Amino acid sequence: MTGSHANAPAGASPAAARPALDTGALERLQAVLEKGVAEGRMPGAVVHVERAGASWRRAVGQRALEPAPEPLDEQAVYDCASLTKVVCTATVMARLMQEGLVRPEDPVSRHLGDFAGGSAITLRHLLTHTSGLPASLSLAQPWQGAQAALERACASVPTHAPGTFFRYSDVNFILLGRIAERTAGRSLDVLVQDWIFGPLRMRDSGYLPLSRHPLPRLVPTEWSDSPVAGGQPSEGGASGSRATMLRGHVHDPTARRMGGVAGHAGLFSTAADLARFARMIVRGGELDGARVLSEAAVAHMLEVASPAAVADRRSLGWDVESAFSRARGARYPAGSTGHTGFTGCALWIDRTSGAFHVLLSNRVHPRTRETIVAIYEEVGTLAAQAAGLPPRPEAAQRA
Image 1: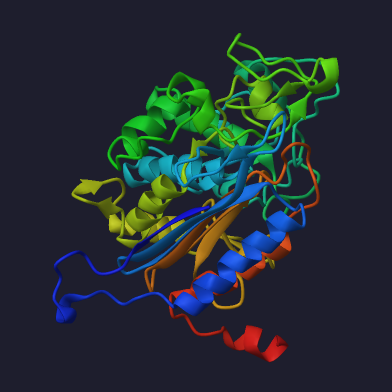
Image 2: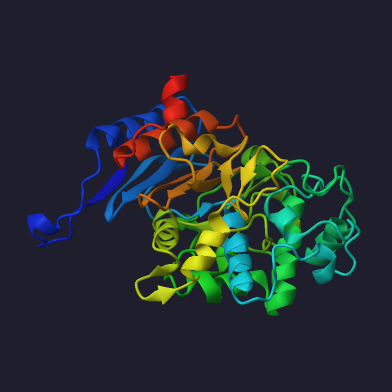
């Protein structure tokens, strides 16, 4: 187990010292993760908590259990699953909106002429998961490649009228990723590098991590019987089986068929890099002299954008208050935003206070196990408590 503290900068006077985080809450947060590891809920995790320059980061447990145990450190590179939706796709769409190249009310068919879902479905519906489109693409039949995925996504037919029903959908973000590529004239992996990761010096972040990182830095997910395209190095299956340990290849099977670059999944990153991204959001689109988005674009991206008829509240890409919001915990206030990822990841940000936390785990290793949503919730509550946020009134009433 490793860890680090960063409260007041070295040499700072007491008057200039930044507020310290609540060490008691941080100790309880670490205990929650240690308990989750001991109970076999996940092999390990890296967590980062920050507010107003005071930060704390810990690595708990192991990087891998199979085919052999491996120690974990804070520099581990994780498969971030659906955090891709907010860190990559929603941010790129916010940049395109800032530049006036797309608008939330644009019909999807304006940007994808072969879209079969009808002219009533807009980019807002895709970003808020209110399009009525299916949750995912079928994998029952063999197909391969980004173009094949796009054809299937464009052929998807909504089951509900747009703007009337919330269904969390990877199809929405597969379409958004392609719209971003067509509008900007560059592939999504290049866009996020040029517009986000490069300017923010997020050197460990991106798609297709085997092109940048040695295998030992990458956190494995699970054994897979599906072939891994590209001839990249992988770990052999156990006991003479033909299974492959997914390591550096995206866990999401649809994104894997697409070649590893998709609007809904494919991002690999570290807790430190995602903390830089969150810091940029807290600071209104700028960090260390690099401006990624205008302050107005950040505010527009994070404000509630769901149709009034839908109870689940989402912004243009982010979760606000929905059936998926348990990572928010009991203290992050109304208006805070975040997201989770299937592999065991969570990110939650409160711009008003400047508090945020990052949680990265590989709870799907060595095989997919039950969700860790209860751990998300405990971590969110304790991270916000460590940052000095009071309980939300409605949360206090429930308790």
